[in-house]
Image (cartoon, rainbow, N blue to C red; front, side, top):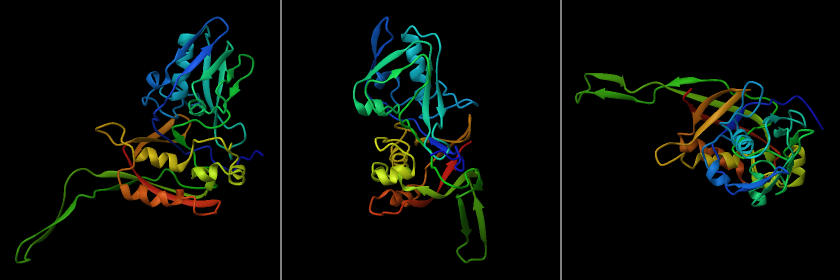
Length: 282
C-alpha cells in the first residue's frame, strides 16, 4: 500500500543514547566500531540537509562518516526516505561504492539503525534500505494537523498592592517566552504506544514492522523525562521540512503527564488526537 495523503513532516528528533558495537568487513579488512563511544548521546536521531540526506550531526550521517574513515569506501551516504509512501514511517537508505558486511553486537543494537538482523550488508550496486525506522525521532503519521503556530507569553506577572488597597499595580519581569502548540488530530495508535506497535493488526494499519521499537510517542516522552545532561533539559528539534527545524523543550511536566495517558495499552482505539505545547527557542 502506498499513499500520499499523509505529511512527511513534522518530525520530532532528539539525541538518543546509542549502545553496543558493530564489526565491519569490506572484503579487504575488518575491524570493530564501538558505537557506545563513537556515537554515545552526541548525535541527533534525525538531521538532514535540504534533500533529506542525513548530515554528520545525525546518528545515520555520523555512522556513515565512521565507515568511510575505516573502510576502503570512497563514497557513502545515508538518506531519509519513504519507500512505502508518505503514509508509512520513514526508513534510512544507504548508498556506498564498496559492499560492506556489518555484524552488530546484538539485535537491539542493530534496531537502533533500523535493521531487523544483526548482520545486514550495505550493497554497492543498489541502495540498502533499513527494515524500519531509526532511534531518536518520532514522525506522527496523521491526516492533518498544525505544527507551526508560535505564541508569545510572559508567565512572570505579579500584582503589587498597598496594605490599604489604595494602589494596585500589575508588573512583569523577565523576558517574553515563545510557546509552540501542536495539534495532531488523528494519529494511529501504532505510532503512539509500544504495545500497539508490536501487535500485527495495529502495526499493519500504520504500515509498520512489528519488530520496530522506534518512532513512537511513548519513546519520545521517555526521552523528554530524561535530562540532556546534568545541567540542561532535553532538547528536541521539530523538523517542518527537509533541513528546516526549530529547537523546542518540554519544560512543563504537566504536558508530558497529560499526553502519557495516550500511551497506555488499556485502550483498543486505533486513532487518537494528540495535542501538547512545547517551549520554542528558535
